[in-house]
Image (spheres, helix red, strand yellow):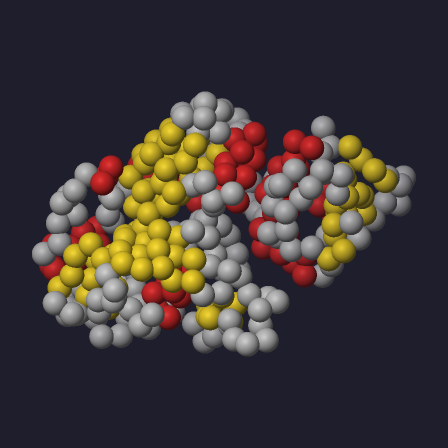
Length: 342
């Protein structure tokens, strides 16, 4: 149980302060909030954070802040109000049969501790401004299906990126898997189609990234001199698997770090943006006329230690339909080698 630190008389209390327990160490603040206040939606949480109503150890906080045992989280009393739908608050729990069926079709691996999904194109992983439907909310509404405890996202991929998404079915599994990602012990492989053919055919991209707003929304770019303090170190290994003349290449991407838009930004920086990427000029000069103008980036494979047994989870996700059509158009053979050889 979370230990209350300060509490005034209920009629007068405007805020309360909760101490982070040892079992909650290394949780992101937004995930901690979902555990303790599941009725508060992501959008409303962001509003509270922006206005400074939620603080950690008396300091302003952000949704992705990591918690440590003993920290004190200041929470406004309004989050204890009755659970009802309203501006900024989630609707009551539960999802439609269609959403339940959609989640079931995404599952490519499941046991008592872990769920691995094959995320489709165009579906957001988490909520945000203007995003009402997302996997996080769909899973929350299916807590009964997964043993009563709320499933927790372990990592995220972009709305238009397809493929493997790892979900923890218990708080303990989420904590252990989160630490595995932080220590870079998870091996991730992405497949992408890029404009042109990278030279050399195998290489490493090391370029620190900074966030930058633009007309098409947030994106990232290479850090400039004087921006190192806010820059995020990012490393990606790439390898060309096949190519169509000099027009396009099928590449395998293995990120060492996990920054927002890392693969998309890195490939753009070396002059080979991912086909269909409208944020990083990948939708210009398409390699063929009949190729879908959708992002051609797929989280193909994940290898990670199991949070309970220590054994190996090794999952591979088949290509989404739009990428499979492109592979057929360009003459690529997605089955040219087994998953174990990727």
